[in-house]
Length: 190
Length: 276
Figure (cartoon, chains in turn blue, purple):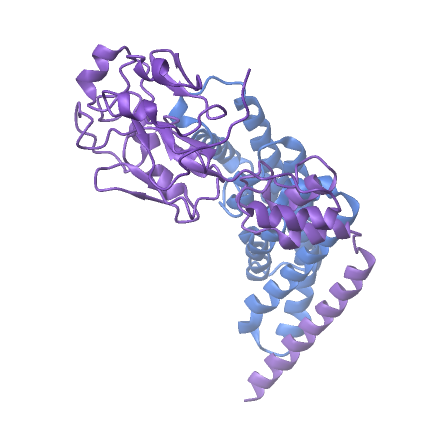
């Protein structure tokens, strides 16, 4: 039950994008159509889950025993960068269309703060291995959910009659704000 | 000292491990790319300006290789790149026509009247969206230099009179300034063309005189004078058909408002195939 609550908390109540405001760069950048938003979400989820597992192992079997906790950021970024490279190669090989649609935002997953944020948070909250992975999965799916929701809204916006100065980024930011406001309604859930 | 050593060794071996893993993954997931596309991309300028109409140099290289774009499609690279691309692909290079940007407005601070003050940000688009800006002419240059800011090649600057000036040697016809101008004043014209009608105002002549001292009043003298029929009237504005203009400059002499200008240094005579 605890695991489920943790999952739900990462997914909705403390949604990484809309409540914690981590990883807003791809949230605005890759939310123009649902397909690439979904692909971006899945790629980020993969990186989040694997990096949650690997960083947990590194924290508990390397940084802890060697008592060099100050190397945390370096080690974690190393893990994330390597994983993103892996995902990029994999996508380039298996799905060139998706690779093209995500463009520069794919390598930029490296600098997506929700990934480093997740790794550091799971250390701070002293999660065990299973909890860390579930936390990562919840965060990833929450990220995907936010991206797909936003992409859906922006697809609809294309047909809306928007005043000229508000076209493009301004109206997208307003929508993002409203979406975030709506997510704050989950606050009482747990 | 010990801590430093431990950090170095542990992080170093971790990095080496990941590097090894990535090297293996690189082999497994290696993607065969078309060597032709790679070669074409190599000779392109690589600034990803998008002037060719494709999303960056790589996309253009792919389009050229598959025959979807002409070899001279890169406006930045010009003739030199067109030739190299054609060599790589083994086709005849299409004769490139170098084009440069021309600003079709002469109404600077001295010539054009103001109708109010604009205190907003220095941006033509914002000024245009704010009740059409501070110039009395609703078609003319707003003078806030959005085109100059858009130019990535230092090919434009604002004159003291508040009009953009094109440095033609640097202009690559990438079209960024054309896009940036909210009033569509800038066009791309073959470099050899030296006669330009620098006005975009579609209002009848009597209104022009109220807002600008150098605007086209649609008197049609140029249309009657032009020996090759290159000038025609449309919506109260004289327009030039660059396919027919031979740089003879007769229209420049008769224009009462000095709207039509001759650029010094351009070829004095242009051979044009007779248009029936």
